[in-house]
Image (cartoon, rainbow, N blue to C red; front, side, top):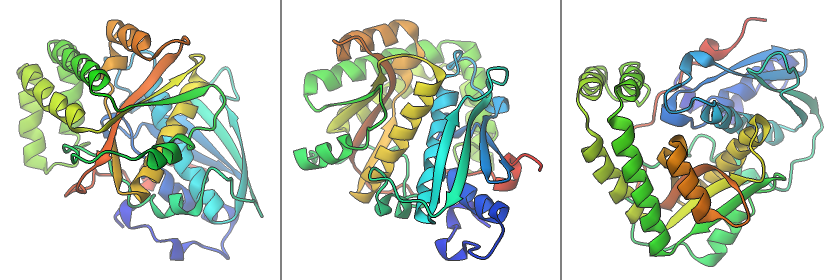
Length: 330
């Protein structure tokens, strides 16, 4: 079955707890991730789900400190919790419960009879199979203050800060950082080699032949100028830039930033708004310092910049590995 075609009507209401948790995980795997790496794994132990990093898909060149690995896991965790609340489960998450196992991101215990959280309204569940990452220019249509305020309310985790920027000077500053990031990254053969491997594995959903041609192009040719022009166009087309930042910088807060981003993306999708991470400014230390100065004071740690706007839906959904491939054996 195509993972995107999961249907709520197929929930095994009379099934075992394991069967029900397996069904919830079919929504977790629809989460976004950096370069569509899907760097997560899951295990089920009784009434608990373990959320783990899958380091086989760790992009070490652009993410040496595992920040994006943690963000990816947070997005998948949020999808899991949104689905759980829809089907009547209460939950309690314990982040990084084992200091000796840093790849174990969270253990979530579930119980029937839960009450939905106020910050996870029912519409978010409806968007789990609708949300897409935008890869096109956005329409020249501003987001009104009521919409921005509603998106701002998605950020409820303590220590996570969400800021939006609609003014053109700030968006130009973002564009400049993205452009310089592209140029620096594509000039690095190690970055191109890592990205080409992602493309060759079909992570971006392109047909096989095109993936192989792109893989060879990226690996052997510095396309930084071409990519930077395209990314600058994307940033400047967007009426709103967002930055998720934090008051501290550790794995737990990075996972929670991922949760907020996915919650926001789902809420945006319900309004016809699409989001796209623009991670170059936080993947290069000197650019991250520049972004820190842009969004401070107070002193914050920028974690996840992204753009928002109205756009047509993508023609093709990015591929998802089947649940069976990311599920640990019992």
